[in-house]
Image (cartoon, rainbow over all chains, first blue to last red; front, side, top):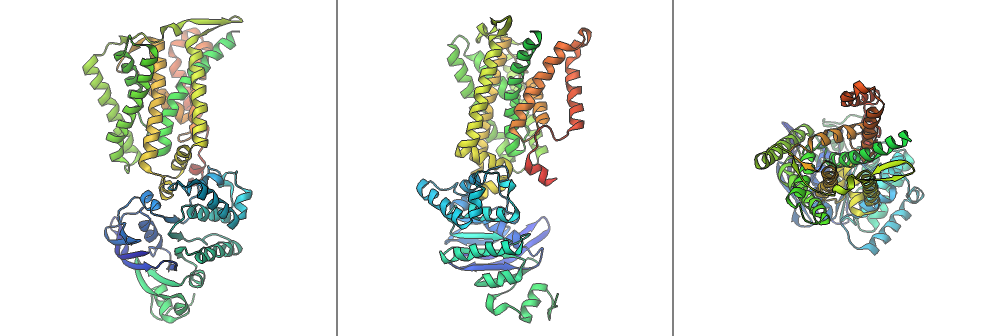
Length: 240
Length: 293
């Protein structure tokens, strides 16, 4: 589904990604974890076409996509839920959801998908005609995911979906992600919350200082000394 | 009765300012460009009327609307699209460059003297009801502005492109991430801006009966002030700002002591400086900007 090879990105003189290679198979949930500033968000923004890469290759669905505009990638059904959610606060919940289907023309199916999204997140139905900016943080996260799903993505990119949310809301968000996986959605998820990521994902990449420090099946990584070393960037690991 | 008469003057002038301010505000809200060359779009509308003088008024008017809309699209394509990622300051300077370039091309071709054009001169007549004398042009300005504002409001609320434009105005990158095509929304904004500019040219030519290479300059300054007063980036604000500038101008004209009236514009700008000191963000503030602060 997604194959990233030796991806390099720098902001001016500062290297943000130093040769990242990852792959995501169809139907998988893959997590990228790592400390603040590891380059996780840059990775997702580069995949989605917002940030330009200097070198490397990205293949999505078998096609090279490096350098394509965000709207082109959206039309190819890659969907990003960015960190901070970025819902359109001055627009209504209904308009936000409708915008998620911008690249589609199949009206009847869009209506059916809207109904499905509202069943998944019933709170959005209650707020449907209200301004999205009035929603709570958790509700905004749900709206951001609902909006992303409206494009019927082949690949959903989620950046820190649990950031700043109450634990109960985080659970709701992750329940939704699991449900989507049952329907065959492929998800690449970036998380700072290690436990969340390791329990949710089939496979996990650990990123540190713009490089992949470690990767493997999530179940195998948890609690090992090597994992701690990769995550915290030091040998032996330190309990924090 | 005098008060009512002044109110009609104020609202009709404000209506024209509102259209001009909307043309500026719409482009700013989407791409952070303060387009001073908007004045030259207004001017080119005037020269389209001049070129077609003698044709039926409807033909002249429609041609001006269509040609200015096309010129606005061309302006975006040639001058502003290559600068899409540039800073707002660079965009502003570029708009000055376009403005001067177009002005001086017209100056070279047509010279500096205003040229007479007959366009809807009959609108200079007035109708009377109940002791009020209302020039037809003022009435037309108010009615056409109301129609355009209503049409724009419906467009932004109910059409897919309108909703996409509002989304792009709030968060351009996120709009692209959901699949909104950057080139299309910006082109649409310029086309609408061009139509608004052309309506202002129709008004100016009908009012003065002349065209000149500088005819858009004053209007674009006022429109800029109005959009700042309204709150840069807010379309409702731009329209309100336009009406407010019109109302303040006419009121000062009517109620300043006679020997101060020649300096009316100084008082107008003084009033708005005071207003901005009190409320620097303008009348309406975009929620997104508030949050960033």
